[in-house]
Length: 141
Image (cartoon, rainbow, N blue to C red; front, side):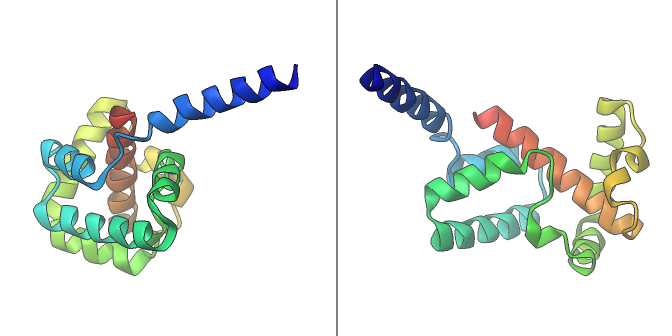
């Protein structure tokens, strides 16, 4: 009986791990380009991802990215950093905020209730990054 349980667990973990195989830097970059992310933002995200892979390894990075699930990566939770990103990519971000409002049928303020204490620019930046990254990850799985 124990052997059957062990075999089932191994099979389940293998299936689960193979779904992460598509989460590579190349595929993330490709999907961000397809989603019309700003070139500089793609570069910045890839640098963050590469650093995480170097520090934690690829498998841990993949698990981390999958488990973000509509949360913003730590590197973008700093309000000042998020405002800087907004100031640099504000046209793209505002366009994406508008798209998200249409897609979700919710105003951006409602979508960012969990971070309402932050500056408006930071909230919009975090909303777009967390939502679009999560969509990409779900698509790759």
